[in-house]
Image (tube, rainbow, N blue to C red; front, side, top):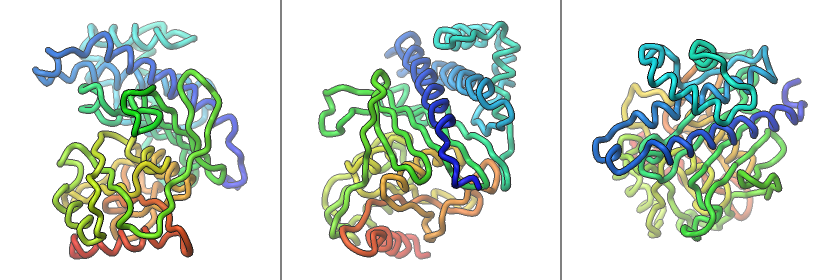
Length: 340
């Protein structure tokens, strides 16, 4: 059975892939992002980093697990139409790879290994090469997110957060955090340059009023006004933490915030599996709880999206029994505000 596997090799390979992709993204930021690109809202550095990170991760997965499929965010169609950009991506990818890409064609083939449709009864990886594009351009939070899904469940999740402080309250301290979770084995944190790991856990509290929200910077990703109303119902007075990307999952998983909400912004929007797979496992393995806004578990067996789910609620644990009591309270407040 899949759940009986320890996924030791998958864990190791995923860490290697995410570290190398994160290094590429940092190189792109240093070399290509400047005040001018930000003022002009030039997203070309993100495009280059997205393609490069996906090529690197897919190549490493292919080398170790040639039969595994990949659900990736990008395809190479636009890249093929721009040879100059493609060459830049090739050079950046090769700067972090031990086995180099020999041509633009080989690079594009690697990117396009991410075209699997997903679905039930299969084993595949899902990748978000840069989650949090605006955060990346601002030099703030972004993440490289990789997860292994087997039979519709997330089994391994690795998240590279190059700009995330190792302790959130020490914003001027060391940055760069790698978050790791394997089903049934707990959640861990380490740095990019030191393989010693520290186990992490969500905070435990006796009341939802004592915890802090973590929410998106962009209002297009969630409804800030609704979040404020939910906080009022729960009697939460502390100011919310706002940041881009799946780093929000990391902050909740290591106990620095107690709630992450991603409320539906439209009736038809379907969350992408690569936006939540590694983060969802991280929350669960750190002792937290996660569901959609109706209380349903997240279903990663439906293809490239969470089409059976609406929104996301991730919470810390209750300091007592049942451990999911905080989640129950938050879920009730969300339903009241959204009229569910």
